[in-house]
Image (cartoon, rainbow, N blue to C red; front, side, top):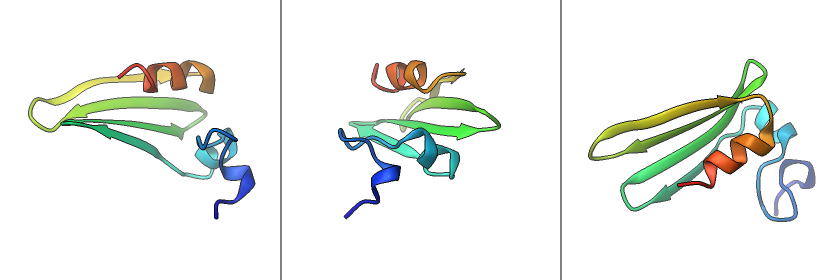
Length: 72
């Protein structure tokens, strides 16, 4: 059972959870995408196990970070 303040109704990590150091990772085929918060901004990074890092973007808002996270 998850703690309510750490997950949204859709099962995503909340801003509070990310501020506490939690990291959201999604893996599809050979690509893994990671979302985390550090120093007041949200980072989204994608790696391909065969080609290395694909991109690393930073955002002020969680909404924009989630859009990028879900783009892969």
